[in-house]
Image (tube, rainbow, N blue to C red; front, side, top):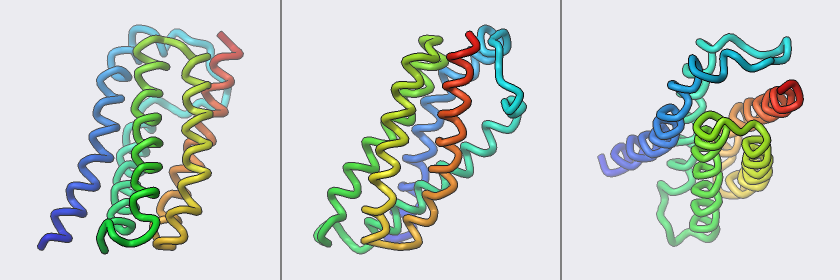
Length: 156
């Protein structure tokens, strides 16, 4: 039962980062984002929320798999700190891009986020291979989002 609580808490914390970001994203969609020039590969707006909900859930399960056997295991604390850093960078991106309406600074943040994920995956892999694999869709989506962010910055 304790592990189930840890799993639920891990997923809720990850989803919470998404909820924080959505506070800045939702109002900006109709007030700002819809008026930006976007590249042809820009997905429809309705696709973003479900994709992110799934990715945050996968992230939550991934960190659960890393920490479930305890903090005393070598590497768990480092992995958790790196996970926390990328989660903060993730939430901050929405605040910067949508809240501050700054594609340039959003691009800087998403670049740092991408680097954090690149470092996080092998750290997770050493502790739990499944946890690392659960982050691959997130890495791919952030890579796509970075390209989209770059294109929006260039077009506007």
